[in-house]
Length: 264
Image 1 (spheres, one colour):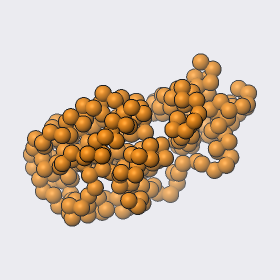
Image 2 (cartoon, helix red, strand yellow; image 1 turned 180 degrees about the vertical axis):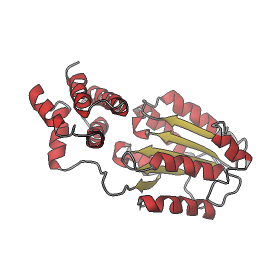
Image 3 (tube, helix red, strand yellow; image 1 turned 60 degrees about the horizontal axis):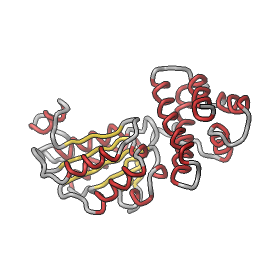
Image 4 (spheres, helix red, strand yellow; image 1 turned 90 degrees about the vertical axis):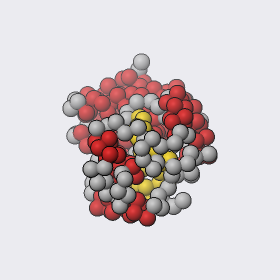
């Protein structure tokens, strides 16, 4: 399936139309960087799928909407969100999806930060996608489809959520060189710190650089690189995101990432 690319203004109208026509894919991958709205859109789309109204906009008054608003709808399953997604979670999801919906017409599963699935988890999910349960919708979110196995991406409808135009993954030649240096390919500690400081001027820039570091680490994990090193880097990158969320300085966060990834 061809990727669908949306601006912020197009997101709601596109998803609403999918519900109205009933022509939505059973497996979707929402991609886009932090702030692009992919997670919020995933929840809103799930709400619209489960709503009894089915006109593309959650009515907020039916029993399904009330259950969703109280975070207690039995047909909505949510996984992930900054932590490694283990195979046991995917297996439990598989069992749940093969059961009939309790209240709504569908069951909906949202897997946030799906790129944090272990290799075993991704393989288990692939089995679900090869034999999709009836009346089920699975929505993955990830900064970039390149962070997921191609076998998973090829079975999904990829919907890319653009931003207002000022937030993109850094991925030019210079940044690629810098990410490699930060992740331990050559260079002294001084050189790594100096490089990191270029991206520590504000939270937004530091976050975007973490996105690029994550992409490089994930691609290394899927390729022939040092898997232990890439796994450690991915774990430390997620910890760095949490530090930024606590308003620690970008300089401290990136320096700490270098030390924990390369010198532990």
